[in-house]
Image (cartoon, rainbow, N blue to C red; front, top):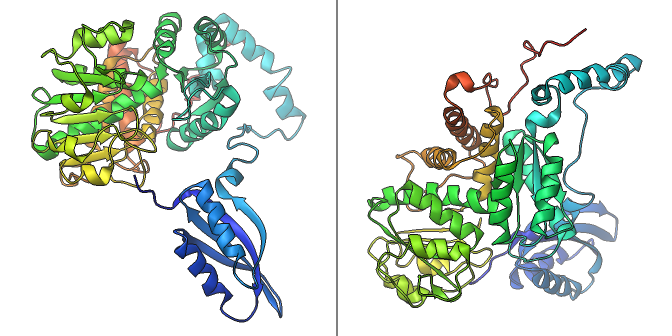
Length: 491
C-alpha cells in the first residue's frame, strides 16, 4: 500500500544557509522532490552573511527521512546542523508525571497531608476498607498492566520496550476521562505470576486495564482476575476493539440499509481482538459469522483447535464452510480484519455481496488497500488516521472506565459493553451519517461523556438499580469527590 508523509515520521533539520540567494526555495524543492512535505520553516538566527533555519519535514519512514536529509546536504552552500526526530523528542523523559493535588506550603499542610494527621485517615480506612475509594486515589486510579508480549504490531518486545505505549495509554486516560492511570510493566510472561502480581497490587486501584498481552494467555489471565478481584478487569485489545467495531458496524448498516441479524460476516483473525469482536457481535444479534486464521476457515473438522478456536468452531460457520479466507469472503455482507496486511485484494472484494462493508483494521498496513476496497465496497474503515472511519480504541476505553469508576462497579460485563457501543454509535447523528463518517473523531467532545454515562447506567442496573449507585459526579466527564458526605470518623 502506498504511504504518505506523516507527522509520526517528522524531523526537524537545522540548516546554515547563505543570507542571500535562493537557498530557501532550494530547501523546499529538495524536500518535495524527495516525496516529503515541509510543515514548518523557521528562521531561528540571522546574520549579515548567513541564516539559521529550522525546517520541519514529514516523511513516510525513518529511512525516507534520512534520504531527505542527504538531499538537503547536497544543496550548495547549505550546512547541516542537528537533526531531531520530533516523535523521540516528545518521549524524552517520559510523557506523564505524578503531581500533588494539594500545596505543601508549611508545617500545618505537612502535618495534615502526612504525619501525624494521616494516621487518623489510615485508621478510618482500616475500620471501613470501602472508605479507601473516598479518601485515597483508589477511586480514580486504573492500572495499565502489560507483559510486553504483544505490543502494537511489534510482537513480543518485552516490558521495557512496552513502557512508551503504556505511558501513552495513561496520558489518554487523563486527557479524555480525567482518570489517573499508572503503567505497570511486568518482567514475566507466566500467567500464574501475572495473576498473582495484579491481585497483590489491586488494593490501590479501582480498575485494571490489561494491555498488549498475547493470546491465548490473555483470555486465561483476564478470566482469572475477573473471578478473583472486586474491581473491573478490562482487556482493551479485546473489548475496546470489539466495542468500537460494533459501534461502527451499527452505523455502517444504517448507511447500507441492512439488518444485523441478516448479514453474513467474515472475519480474518482469531486472536484476542478477533475473538472478542466475534462474541460481542453475536451478543448484538449477528447470527451468520465465519472466522478464518492463518490456516483458513475455522471449522470443527480441523485438528489444531485450542480452547478458543474450538469455541469459535462450535459457535460459528453454520454452513460448514472450509477452505481459505478468499473463498469464505465470497457473498459476505461484511468483512472484518484484525490479522495481517494484504490478505485480500480487489478481486476478492468484488465477490462480496452488494453494498459490502469492509473493516480492514491491521495497522499500519491493512488487510486490503483501502483505496482499492473503496472501488467496490460501500463502506470502508481502517485502523489508520489518514483514512476516513478510523477504528480507534481511544474512542472507548476512557469513557468505559469513567463510567465504571463513577458507578464504583466491581465488574464489567457484556451488557455494559453493548451499552458503550450503542452510545458511541449515537454520537454520529442520522443527519451526519454517510459512508465516510460512521464513527466520530477521537476529539469529538461528546464521546467520552456519552460512553461514560451509558456504562455507568448499565453498571448501576447490574448492581440492582439506582439505589445501589453512588452519588452522581458533578457535571462533566471527570468524577469529583463529594466533600459534603465524608464517612464518620473519630475526631
